[in-house]
Length: 372
Image 1: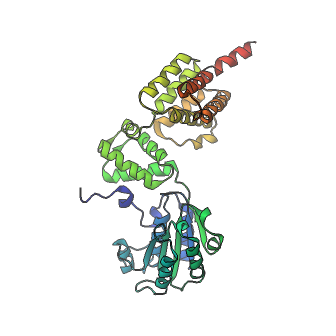
Image 2: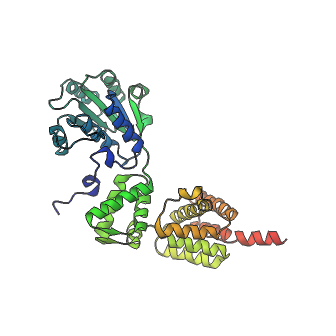
Image 3: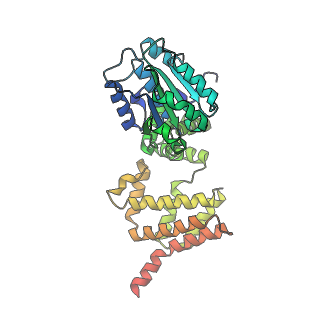
C-alpha cells in the first residue's frame, strides 16, 4: 500500500521519445536543442493533461545533459540527469502562479534568476498556470523575461492563453499542445496495462480514452480507478459499469429498430435505459454521436474519422451498410433538435420519446412519399 504510485506519476514521460501525441512539438524542441537555437522564453499552452509541464521538465533536463545522445535525448547517466531523476536538481525551478501571483513573488523570482547554475549550463524556470499572475506581476516580469541572464530559460505553461497580456506573448515562442487522439491514449493505456500485468479488452481501452476527452492524465486516473474496481482482468462491461457509460449495444439495437420502423421497440429500449439509471440527455448526446459515426462509415475517405477499434469498428461498418445516408442525415437533424430543446422541456421523457418516434418513422414516410 505504502509503495503504490498512481499511473499518471509512475508512467510520466522522462524523454521526448516517450511523450504521447505531441510529435510536432517534441521534434521542434529537439531540433532547437540540436542546433543550439534556444529562446529565452517559451509558452506551452493547451488543455489539461496533454503534457505541457512534462515537456517543460524534459526540455530542462535535456538542455542540461552533459552527454546528450545522438537522437537529442538525455543520457540519464550524468550528474545533471541523475539529480533531475531523483528530484534534487538545482537547475530546475518550478513556480505555481496560482498561489504565487503577486508582485513580491515575481521580485523574489527575479532575484533568484541572477544566480548562475552550479551544475549544467542553464537554470530553467517553469511557471505553471501563468495566466493567474496579476497585472502588476506581469508588468514586473516583462523586462526579465525579455532580457534574462544567458543561463536563464523561462517556460510558461497555461490552459488559458487568452488571459495572458500581449506584451508577454510577444516575448515567448508559443507552442500549442493538441488534445491527444483517442487511438494514442488507448495505445498508451495498453502499454501501461501490459507492464502492470493487467488484461483489458480493447473496447474498454477505447471507452476510457473517450471519457478522458484528450487528456492523458485523466485517462491514467480513470484506468487506476477501474483497476481498483475490477482487479487485473478487466472486461468491457467492467469499464462501462464503473464509468456509468451506456453500452454501444443499446445504440446498435435502436438503429436496427429504426430501420424496421419499430416505434414500440424503440420506446421499450429507451425505457430500459432509463430503468438502468442513465440520464436522458446523455443518451440523446450518445445517440447523436452514434448516428454521426455511422454516417462517417458510409464513405471510405471519412471512415478514418471513426475513433473506435476492434469488433466495434466492424459492427459500425456493417450497420452503416444497412442504412441510407439520407436517413442518417435526417436522423441527426431530429436528434440535434431534441438535444437543443432538452433542457427547456417540461416533460423530458416525452421530449426524447417524440424524437425516437420521428426517427423510427423516417423510412416509412419515405416509402409512402415514393409510392404516392
